[in-house]
Image (cartoon, rainbow, N blue to C red; front, side, top):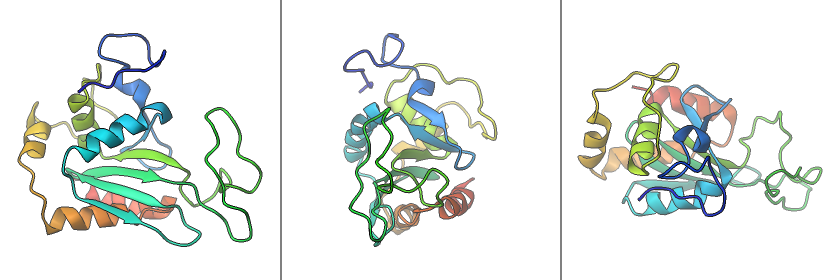
Length: 188
Protein backbone atom coordinates (compact mmCIF):
# COMPACT_ATOMS: atom_id res chain seq x y z
CA UNK A 1 0.00 0.00 0.00
CA UNK A 2 1.90 3.03 -1.21
CA UNK A 3 1.04 6.49 -0.01
CA UNK A 4 -0.47 8.34 -2.94
CA UNK A 5 -0.99 12.06 -2.89
CA UNK A 6 -4.61 13.12 -3.18
CA UNK A 7 -4.03 16.48 -4.84
CA UNK A 8 -0.67 17.74 -5.95
CA UNK A 9 1.32 16.42 -3.01
CA UNK A 10 4.94 15.52 -3.67
CA UNK A 11 7.01 15.87 -6.79
CA UNK A 12 4.82 13.72 -9.03
CA UNK A 13 7.11 10.68 -8.99
CA UNK A 14 5.43 7.33 -9.40
CA UNK A 15 4.62 5.69 -6.08
CA UNK A 16 3.86 9.01 -4.44
CA UNK A 17 6.19 11.52 -2.83
CA UNK A 18 9.80 10.69 -1.93
CA UNK A 19 10.39 9.54 1.64
CA UNK A 20 12.33 12.73 2.49
CA UNK A 21 9.33 14.85 1.43
CA UNK A 22 7.14 12.99 3.91
CA UNK A 23 9.53 12.41 6.83
CA UNK A 24 11.90 15.24 7.77
CA UNK A 25 14.50 15.20 10.56
CA UNK A 26 13.09 16.83 13.69
CA UNK A 27 14.96 19.35 15.79
CA UNK A 28 13.84 17.40 18.89
CA UNK A 29 16.52 14.69 18.82
CA UNK A 30 18.64 12.63 16.45
CA UNK A 31 16.59 9.78 15.01
CA UNK A 32 13.25 11.60 15.31
CA UNK A 33 11.39 12.43 12.10
CA UNK A 34 8.37 14.72 11.64
CA UNK A 35 5.55 13.38 9.46
CA UNK A 36 4.12 15.81 6.95
CA UNK A 37 0.62 16.92 8.03
CA UNK A 38 -1.29 15.84 4.91
CA UNK A 39 -0.08 12.24 5.04
CA UNK A 40 -0.66 11.57 8.75
CA UNK A 41 -4.15 10.04 8.24
CA UNK A 42 -2.73 7.47 5.81
CA UNK A 43 0.07 6.56 8.21
CA UNK A 44 -2.50 6.17 11.01
CA UNK A 45 -4.52 3.79 8.83
CA UNK A 46 -1.41 1.73 8.06
CA UNK A 47 -0.48 1.59 11.75
CA UNK A 48 -4.03 0.48 12.65
CA UNK A 49 -3.78 -2.43 10.21
CA UNK A 50 -0.53 -3.76 11.72
CA UNK A 51 -1.78 -5.03 15.11
CA UNK A 52 0.91 -3.10 16.97
CA UNK A 53 1.09 -2.51 20.70
CA UNK A 54 -0.43 0.91 21.34
CA UNK A 55 -0.82 3.24 24.30
CA UNK A 56 -2.24 6.68 24.97
CA UNK A 57 -1.28 9.38 27.42
CA UNK A 58 -3.84 11.87 28.67
CA UNK A 59 -2.72 14.30 31.38
CA UNK A 60 -4.27 17.61 32.32
CA UNK A 61 -2.50 20.56 30.69
CA UNK A 62 -0.16 18.22 28.78
CA UNK A 63 -0.40 17.18 25.13
CA UNK A 64 -2.50 14.08 24.45
CA UNK A 65 -0.26 11.33 23.06
CA UNK A 66 -1.05 8.25 20.99
CA UNK A 67 1.88 5.86 20.59
CA UNK A 68 2.62 2.73 18.57
CA UNK A 69 5.61 0.49 19.36
CA UNK A 70 7.57 -0.41 16.24
CA UNK A 71 10.89 -2.30 16.34
CA UNK A 72 13.28 -0.34 18.59
CA UNK A 73 11.30 2.87 18.24
CA UNK A 74 7.78 3.75 17.27
CA UNK A 75 5.40 6.47 16.26
CA UNK A 76 3.92 9.19 18.45
CA UNK A 77 1.01 11.46 17.58
CA UNK A 78 0.80 14.60 19.69
CA UNK A 79 -2.46 16.55 19.98
CA UNK A 80 -2.90 20.19 20.92
CA UNK A 81 -2.79 21.17 24.57
CA UNK A 82 -4.91 23.65 26.48
CA UNK A 83 -2.97 25.79 28.90
CA UNK A 84 -4.42 26.74 32.31
CA UNK A 85 -6.85 29.65 32.18
CA UNK A 86 -6.97 29.70 28.38
CA UNK A 87 -9.78 28.35 26.18
CA UNK A 88 -8.99 25.02 24.50
CA UNK A 89 -6.63 25.54 21.58
CA UNK A 90 -7.05 24.09 18.15
CA UNK A 91 -4.31 23.04 15.83
CA UNK A 92 -4.11 25.81 13.23
CA UNK A 93 -4.45 25.05 9.55
CA UNK A 94 -1.09 24.54 7.83
CA UNK A 95 0.53 27.86 7.00
CA UNK A 96 -1.51 29.78 9.58
CA UNK A 97 -0.30 30.96 12.94
CA UNK A 98 -2.22 29.81 16.02
CA UNK A 99 -4.27 32.34 17.92
CA UNK A 100 -2.25 33.90 20.74
CA UNK A 101 -2.23 31.71 23.83
CA UNK A 102 -4.03 28.69 22.36
CA UNK A 103 -1.04 26.44 21.89
CA UNK A 104 2.35 26.28 23.60
CA UNK A 105 4.81 28.91 22.40
CA UNK A 106 7.41 27.73 19.89
CA UNK A 107 10.12 27.69 22.58
CA UNK A 108 7.95 25.71 25.00
CA UNK A 109 9.28 22.53 26.59
CA UNK A 110 5.98 20.81 25.67
CA UNK A 111 5.88 18.92 22.38
CA UNK A 112 4.05 20.73 19.63
CA UNK A 113 1.17 18.97 17.86
CA UNK A 114 2.14 16.58 15.10
CA UNK A 115 3.17 13.03 14.32
CA UNK A 116 6.73 11.75 14.64
CA UNK A 117 8.63 8.58 13.81
CA UNK A 118 11.10 7.54 16.51
CA UNK A 119 14.18 5.62 15.37
CA UNK A 120 16.01 4.95 12.14
CA UNK A 121 14.77 1.37 11.90
CA UNK A 122 11.19 2.58 12.27
CA UNK A 123 11.81 5.11 9.51
CA UNK A 124 13.33 2.48 7.20
CA UNK A 125 10.47 0.03 7.83
CA UNK A 126 7.71 2.60 7.24
CA UNK A 127 9.41 3.90 4.09
CA UNK A 128 9.69 0.34 2.72
CA UNK A 129 6.20 -0.78 3.69
CA UNK A 130 4.51 2.35 2.39
CA UNK A 131 6.39 2.07 -0.88
CA UNK A 132 8.01 5.51 -0.77
CA UNK A 133 10.84 6.01 -3.26
CA UNK A 134 14.37 7.04 -2.28
CA UNK A 135 16.26 6.73 0.96
CA UNK A 136 19.17 4.38 0.23
CA UNK A 137 21.97 6.48 1.73
CA UNK A 138 22.70 6.24 5.48
CA UNK A 139 21.49 9.12 7.60
CA UNK A 140 23.66 10.90 10.19
CA UNK A 141 23.84 8.75 13.33
CA UNK A 142 22.22 5.75 11.67
CA UNK A 143 23.55 2.24 12.13
CA UNK A 144 22.81 0.45 8.86
CA UNK A 145 21.47 -3.08 9.04
CA UNK A 146 21.84 -5.91 6.57
CA UNK A 147 19.32 -5.26 3.74
CA UNK A 148 15.99 -6.86 4.56
CA UNK A 149 16.77 -7.34 8.28
CA UNK A 150 14.44 -4.57 9.47
CA UNK A 151 11.49 -6.01 7.58
CA UNK A 152 12.31 -9.53 8.78
CA UNK A 153 12.42 -8.29 12.39
CA UNK A 154 9.05 -6.63 11.91
CA UNK A 155 7.50 -9.72 10.32
CA UNK A 156 8.76 -11.89 13.21
CA UNK A 157 7.45 -9.56 15.93
CA UNK A 158 5.20 -10.67 18.74
CA UNK A 159 2.78 -8.55 20.64
CA UNK A 160 3.94 -9.15 24.20
CA UNK A 161 4.45 -7.38 27.51
CA UNK A 162 7.72 -5.87 26.29
CA UNK A 163 6.12 -4.22 23.24
CA UNK A 164 3.21 -2.98 25.37
CA UNK A 165 5.72 -1.45 27.82
CA UNK A 166 7.55 0.18 24.90
CA UNK A 167 4.29 1.74 23.67
CA UNK A 168 3.52 2.98 27.19
CA UNK A 169 7.01 4.48 27.43
CA UNK A 170 6.49 6.31 24.13
CA UNK A 171 3.12 7.60 25.38
CA UNK A 172 4.90 9.43 28.22
CA UNK A 173 6.67 11.76 25.77
CA UNK A 174 4.82 15.01 26.38
CA UNK A 175 7.86 17.29 26.39
CA UNK A 176 11.22 17.60 24.70
CA UNK A 177 13.20 16.19 27.62
CA UNK A 178 11.10 13.05 28.04
CA UNK A 179 11.24 12.43 24.28
CA UNK A 180 15.05 12.70 24.28
CA UNK A 181 15.28 10.26 27.21
CA UNK A 182 13.00 7.74 25.50
CA UNK A 183 14.84 8.03 22.17
CA UNK A 184 18.14 7.36 23.97
CA UNK A 185 16.67 4.41 25.90
CA UNK A 186 15.27 2.78 22.77
CA UNK A 187 18.31 3.34 20.55
CA UNK A 188 20.05 0.05 19.66
